[in-house]
Amino acid sequence: MKKNKNIFIGLSEVAGFGAMYAKGLKNLGYNVNFIISKPDLVNRDYPFDRCLDIQKYPKIFRLVILTFELVKSIIKYDYFIFLYGKSFWPGNYDLPVLKIFRKKIIAIFLGCEIRQRETILNLNRTYTPCQDCTNDCSFKIKKHIASMFEKYADKLFCQPEYDQLLENKDYEYAWVPIDIDEWKPVINIENTTIKIIHAPSNSQKKGTTYILDAIQKLKAEGYDINFFLAQNLSNHELKKHLEEADLIIDQLMIGWYGKLSTESMSLGKPVICWIDETLKNSVQELPIIIANPNNIYKKLKYILDNKETLLEIGIQSRDFVFKNHNYLHICKHIIGLFEEMK
Image 1: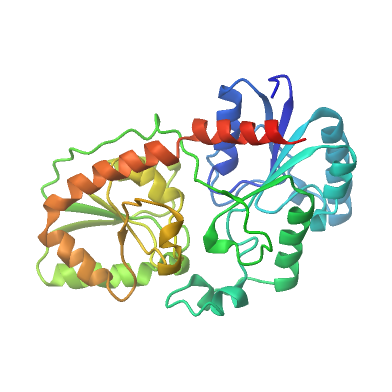
Image 2: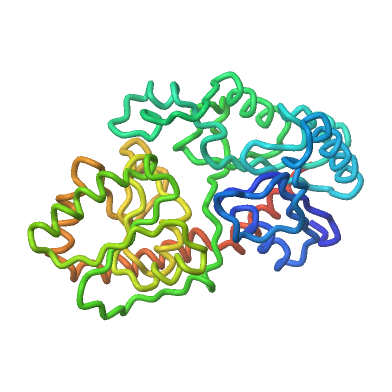
């Protein structure tokens, strides 16, 4: 693909995915703009090129702003990367317009935009965040998002943990992109007390209650634990705590691993996370310590009694991220996919 081709990324940000794609493609020499429709209120520290701030305007004007942006983008960009199931118009009805102008489209699904409560519950998993989730979860809306991108996108990225609404399972695996040079291993931490970090972006989805109960029980039994619940921290502050940790507990409910697990593994840290049995074969040689709400106490107790095992798991974790999650390798793969599109 010629490097004078222009690439659009937007219009959402989730856990820094957009920022990493933009950074990687720019570092590879491509003209890229990462534009979001409104600020990411959960992760405020991730950079972007421009924010439309449409939430500041009445709904009738939002469509005008987005349409104006669509027209400009059709003129300017050759390739489009849409994140989290959102394009310019509500309902993704701008996708056929983009195809009329022969634009190439990649859609990257990142979770709840196509993860549907009833569909997940019908899988009869032992644990799922959908069980107690109170957010709106319309099958009709989410199925429409999946169907529109399946029809008009040239390539989809997804993970098997949330692919239930996709008719075609022939998608690219959505590896979490990170800058491994920014997340260099910090393995030889000489903590006199084992330091355990849990950083829930959503306590219900992460199973925080079960983790707190297990830690409290182990402390009552006399185990020397320095436990830190990392909340409301900047990315820089959280990274400092992760670097000082001996063990990271990510989540016990979702059934797969995400950004926090990946960054922690890149630092050479052992990670505890629940991996659903049906998804284990999706990724080979995953070095994560698997635990769920029923056995998190026993898993932590075993680790505390066998702390010498953590060093090797940490080394394996860094190697795994280096092989699979390097943002430059991921962005080179995206460029390769664009080059293959007719």
